[in-house]
Length: 188
Image 1 (cartoon, rainbow, N blue to C red):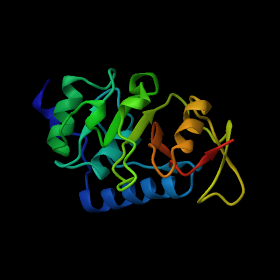
Image 2: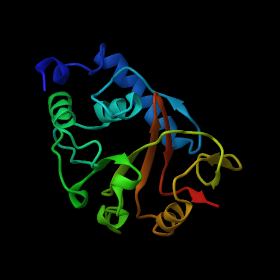
Image 3: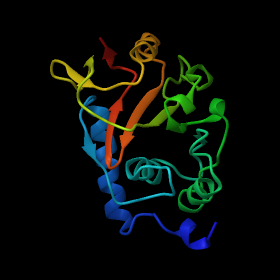
Image 4: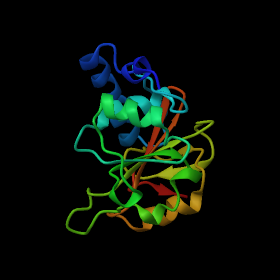
């Protein structure tokens, strides 16, 4: 890997770009099923700009990250280490995980929190080829009536919701678009 590729891809104006990315990330979780534009950072292939922005915004040297097989490359590890300092760990130790739906399985390997500390669960950043507000019907906090989102496996999200207040939270990314699915969302 060339040193210049490790050094590139961070936010050009870190304070402003991180603030905009953080707002988009929070809006995506607060309003499940909506698509938010998130930009300002890029990473090495195959990571999308949206997923790169999430990692740049939400991770630091105290945030454990798991990389799925397609994303677990030397370039990606070096980029993440340089820009965030986040350690790369196993699924069981991860606070955040990045990968395609297939690469992030089995979901049972991630922490779902504990009754005393439900927030100590993992958040998965799922890279998608397409992100659309059609498909599975969603209901719950942040949704006026219902919303829709193309999800990779409806049964997995129903099972995750059954664990509430424990469970996993999800971001779905494609290009510069992000959508959120918190564990509190019911998938119909």
